[in-house]
Image 1: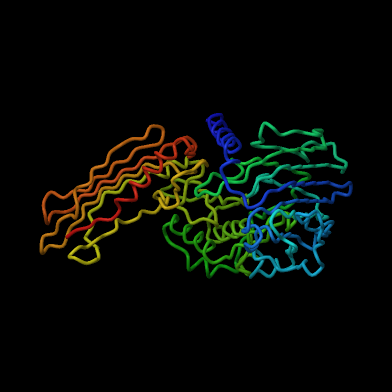
Image 2: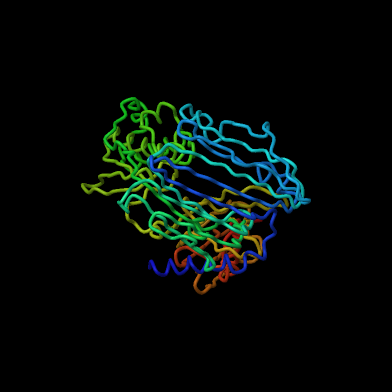
Length: 499
């Protein structure tokens, strides 16, 4: 199964490089991106970034916060930011230095409404002398006081890149290879290592296409070239014994005799009432907040929210712990214990830990429904069929007629049977002919839709069945048109009209 998934991802990555470069209009083009990470002998890290970007279209110049500005996140408590170079090369070759008043420090949007993050800064660099075919050059260094490094960098951007250099040097003394690493994924065949040693890497890529601008995309890490680097050990330890007596009244209000409902109530409380500050862990020196800090401030990172959720569940009497990405809680039902994996950042149905995702996407509904339609004129009423939680949710309007990117979908097996009782007097009949759709698309799935009425006044019987089963939930560009037809038909017949 792993090899099948790896093969499919590689195929998608290959498609990305083979034809994407030539079909997408580009607002700008990077002449060079160079990232250099240097671990110094005192354990500090120097992160140097250089970009040279050529502006080609009006949007790159005028669109707010696009190519005309650069935003550099840093934390003055652990970072020292130095601008090495910043200027614009005009088409005639002349240079215009970025003026001093074009460098503005401000509070990042991600840090608003949470006091303990108010020290983090965003250096806005407002580039000047912008015109068609000019080249913006920016080079800066962040000197970071940290003994730990763990970064994954996606090498693709929203416009093409002529040359990308990634350099990683470890000058700190260490003989333990477990303390450092350099890993790559989805690299094109044209990549080249100028240096590939135990503590020194220099990777060069050329002609990287821009990222896709499509809906329902697979995770970027599975599609685009990326580099992961690490150094040192993360000493941040989560206290999985922490209780939260400060929240006892909240827990009491959320309590329910049904343990599943109780856990869901607590999870929903954290999801709805604790503001999420999605800040890169590196800016916080990979530290998290205690459950008490997050609860009293009503804000925190996604990891902080999971730490709080685990503490609230323990306060409610459940056995719970977190790895910061998920919360694992043990629920006792009918003299048996079951472990569930949940997160404070998504209000999805509770799922047993280790259960296959596809098992959760099977939905079977068989119901008698009263007519709940609305008059729309001409003696016609219409009623929209109910939506079931967890059902497939893909908007046909977001599926373009021509797509070259793979599409991510959750496989499903949904079956609905509705018998809709119509108003007694006068007799009502379906508008239009009965619907009878039944077909299969090989390698993708099948659909069946039947809408019928035996005679005027009789109940309307609706049968809807959809099965999507593509390996790893990836619809390839070759399968896309057939998949799009399935989704269009599935969403077309959701409204019942009577007269």
